[in-house]
Every structure is written in C-alpha cells, then in structure tokens.
Amino acid sequence: MRLIPYIQFYEFEALLYSNPSILDETMQIDSFNSKLNQLNEIINAYASPEEINNNPNTAPSKRLLNLYEGYEKMTHGCDAAELIGLSSIRTKCELFNQWLNTLEALSPSPMS
Image (tube, rainbow, N blue to C red):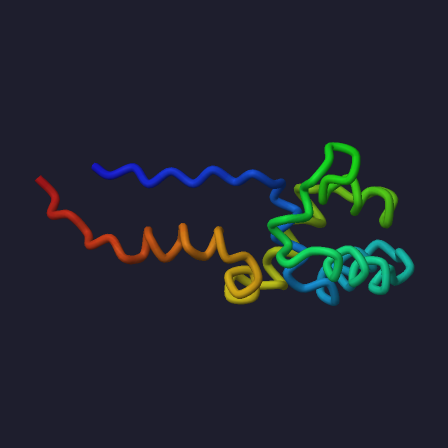
C-alpha cells in the first residue's frame, strides 16, 4: 500500500476562489447581493487561490463570512465546489493539481 500525503496549508474555501463568478452565484441562492467585485479584488491580490490563507483573520472562510452573512461550509462550500468543478479548481490551484496528478499516475497494484 502506498501513502501519498497531501498537506493543504490553506482552508478548503481557498479552492472555491478558483471561480469567483460561480462562488458568488452559489452564495446568492440564499438571496444575498452580488459580491463579485469584492471576490475579484481578493483573488487578484494573489497569484493563486492557494495563497489567500495568509492570516487567521483573513482566511478564505473568514472572507466569505464577511461578504456573505450566513455562509456555511457544508452547504454553500459543497454546492460551490460541485458547480465550479474539479477541472477549474485544478487549473487554478497548482499544488492541489500536482497532488492529484501524482495519485492518478500510480498504477494499480495487483490484489493479493
């Protein structure tokens, strides 16, 4: 058995910044006003969504809570991730993509 660890130094929500438009649309399901401009300002300040987690007070989830009152990781986060899709997340999040590439490159071992 092989173990290929992946240590994510940022919150799950960082991956959601891969597509600010879809993230904003998902959050509006609960009748929130669009915050797309603010989301774009956040992502444009960083080279990658994976770099957004630079302070506990400005972590990706804290930023979403500040923009969208009532943000819930298990509901809104999962919905947004599904709509954004793995392909978009992989395109924008290089470290996450590299880990997935490593896993995909493993050949299945024969069952004993």
